[in-house]
Length: 163
Image (cartoon, rainbow, N blue to C red; front, side, top):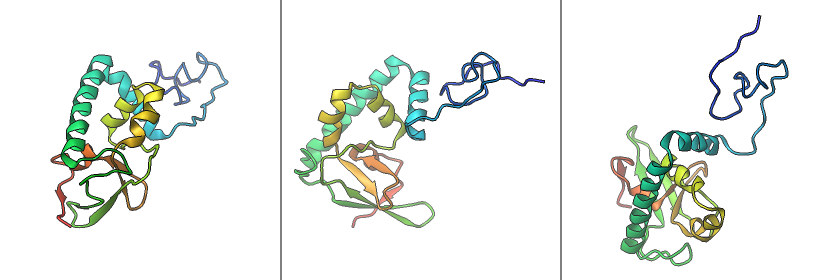
């Protein structure tokens, strides 16, 4: 008895649908992806959002990052202007999370879902020329990063301490 899922998955890696199992054959193999799960999820979100919506978000983000950089006189990681070097975020559970502004050119992407979608939908040359200069705050455990716009967004984070 064969079990099969009739609708194809979005990632191409589920190992159950017709697309992943070579049209219902017995040679069902899940391909290992070199991309992180977060990037694969952003690729899937791109499919749901569509080109027009992504373009609107990109325009809005570009405006917000330009305003953030102008307000903080931020030019690049080496010329940070008045941007805070460290930010403590007070979580709702009472704990604090520390973020530090990257002080070198980087290849780090903001972990916000929309920021990742915008990143994936920009040309490759733009990744090194623009994204390497963005203000990125790294969490102290190095497992999560936020750009200057996302770390200041309200209502999330709930509270930024004055320290």
